[in-house]
Image (cartoon, rainbow, N blue to C red; front, side, top):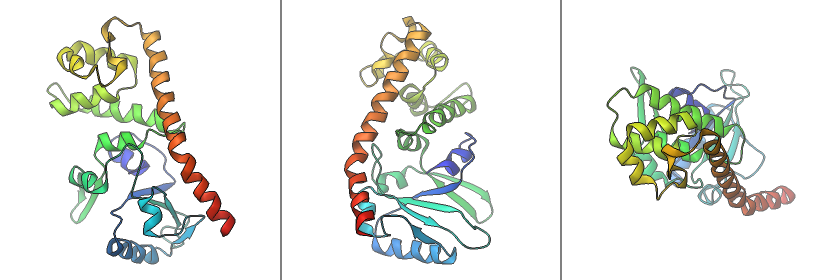
Length: 225
């Protein structure tokens, strides 16, 4: 669900860790614990690897000591702001078969983009690259859901203008869902850039607000530890 997934979707990123979203059930956590043991991985920082923290929206962080993964960090989550619960994510996941017997399950691209809407500076260029990469691969006859995804998530004036020109009826359909789409064909690119920055800042602020109580809980855990 992180940088590694972005690489699979064609938005290259140097990633220092592996991010996983998992089903927060006891048997599943036991299986993950065994996998972490195989990697000689230990929990770093807080919180501990317990189901209650995952269900509450915290990430659990591991550091691997196995010689083939020395220093690799693995971050595990089960709940994220603006992203559906695991059962929905799993139902609409993307599965990639790399080699015989080597399969990867990724968050669906729209879910990955939603998960990237954080307060971190590095996530917003990645969202732009993910959408642009998907658009460039689509060809001349994209599916309806793909077009709606681009209109909801595109973050560059040029691409938005192109979408407005190519798909005016779908643009009209989504105008009530995304204010930036209103009067899109007539807006100057400079003004569109300003609106995109304002839209981004609203998401960043929503993410900051989401994490305030969670950060307080982490601080309390650190003091206790």
